[in-house]
Image (cartoon, rainbow, N blue to C red; front, side, top):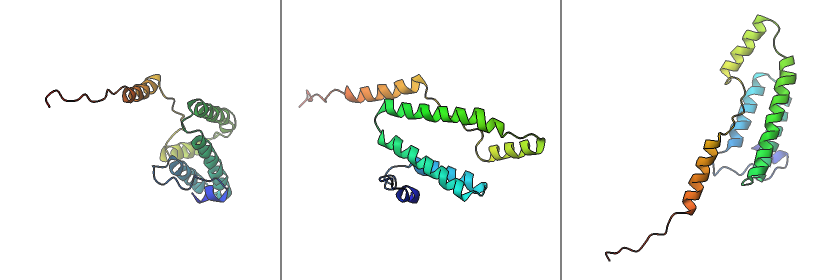
Length: 142
């Protein structure tokens, strides 16, 4: 998390106690850009990822605010996919093969998973179950 420290985002570098999603995201950004040999581009994408993760962390526990962030990311994904990415698609079989081979090697098509209502309800039920656990009654045998 050296980049987080270098751009002045406090707290991002000290999150070693729990598994770090930011480390996984930044690792994948580095992998993608290193393959393309664009060190400056990797640094820029890493900085974007760091800022987004910092903003998500800042909104921890604020469901509506995190939902707004997820919607923004989804809108950006759609805009890039439907515009710039489609414009850059290969025009011959060799280039298409190279793109598909790269996609297969690096995890396929980028996808933004949406939680199903059932998953949200399971989390809600688990939390409400914790709140409604009755206190242990004293034993009648003793």
